[in-house]
Length: 403
Image 1: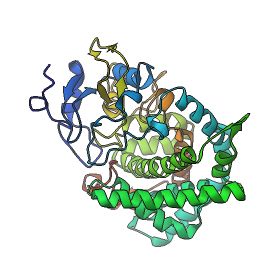
Image 2 (image 1 turned 60 degrees about the vertical axis):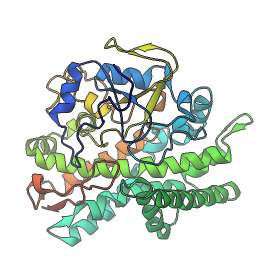
Image 3 (image 1 turned 90 degrees about the horizontal axis):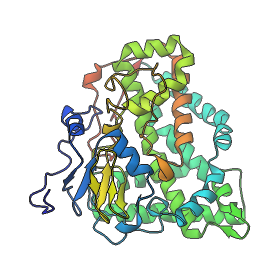
Image 4 (image 1 turned 90 degrees about the vertical axis):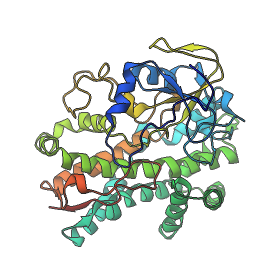
């Protein structure tokens, strides 16, 4: 296949704001991975089969190092793929070291210890939703607020700082933001996180940022820049991803009413339902997931060879609908027998460090809404719900509900 950018197919092949998955993406799974040109950066290989995507995420022959200093393929002008101090741009042994130290704050036990705290915030926000009455917007009153409160609480930010933090996250991740707006927002947010880190060094508190600041093995500990990058990653990855998943989860269960009723009546299905909803909901816009680079010539399970030093995009939301990995993959099924793990939060050494936290927030929210509003409905037809045209994730703009 030609590598001339002028002769390559453009990617994404189609863009949409809602969480529909155009059949043309699933058709790609019938063919081998192909080379394409994204709006910015050098040409890239597009992978859509489940086995191939999991290999790109999990095989140590793929990494981030070869991309440092390159023109990273991307959807928008700002290139964050060339900063080697970011955890999501590191390879072993640096990545292994930083991830090991940071994981002290994100163990499943520590995250589960947050259950009561998150439940309290959930109940408070649902009180506000209920007080608003019929037509209350679940996105405005709940989905956007809970994850931001959680992340702010983890970092020990004061409640009055939350509007400032959200404003800058929105500017950094908005697809319509200018380069100057993105840079200004990054500077403002990194300054705020840096101040919080400095405060924890001098006066530790009962929050996960203090755990990160104090994390050490013998004389090894996280540097100031490493702490700053982890804090920034928490804001950028732990806020919008969870907010979008919360809204899309409720929308999906309202659209597929039989699944809502099934879960309402069989609550022991909750764990399976959460995994299935992560699999089925395509939260990222096409072209948005993290890029990997081949350290050497690598043959994928499909037989396609990715040449050394070339970039690959694993479209995991398409891979999560691969019929060879998930029979009747287009259906939402809470009774899958021994299902493959979904790739919604990546896989391998770069799997989302906050995956347990995101899942806990969705679990507490869904259980609480089912308990409190068992007859929840949308006040509009699900197909008439508005979706944001400006976030890097696919997210409801508003979700009016009644009960």
